[in-house]
Image 1 (tube, rainbow, N blue to C red):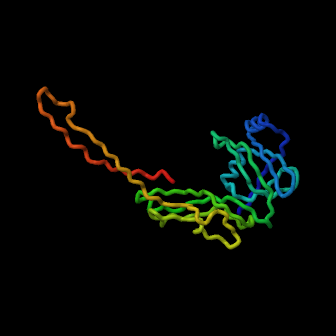
Image 2: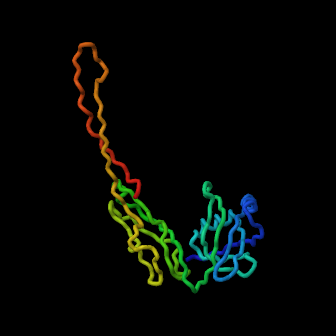
Image 3: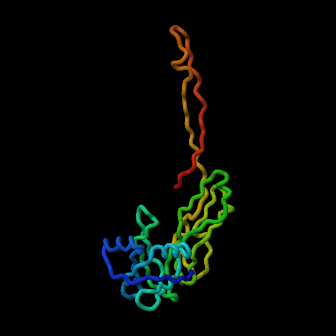
Length: 225
């Protein structure tokens, strides 16, 4: 797991109104806790933290400075964003860690390559976007990769197909599907119509029904299971 420095400030204002005012001013509230030590309320510059996330992602060992004491080794526990404006940071939780003790983290799954099955009309699905791992912080990957460049329609990649060092424990069910290229579903629609109905008829003129139009068969992509 990568390491990075993050500057924060102690926070001494509380409540929803104060938090809204803080966000309008460009900061957002957060807390630091864990390892039997007290909870420390902090605030972080939203613009700087967004840049931090773009550079390092959420799965990173943080050397946090500015809490009022020595630098602390922490990881991100949770980031809350506005339910409508996702770019607005509402709150964040950080938890203290020791580099000598295992941690649990949800590691993002990243797809690489282009699946031939998609070119054949299949649907590439990623039902498991993060995989839960347990290991020492230094052994925790920032992200895990799945190469889909050989996946045909019907192929599936399971959790058990990942290969990690012996010290890295997978917490997810090994039979869970990570990536699959599913078969497109074929839908048959039948449209019937009559030609000449009500058109070109005159009193006493004999009319005949036109044959029904042929079936229309269309392909519809699977919306996902």
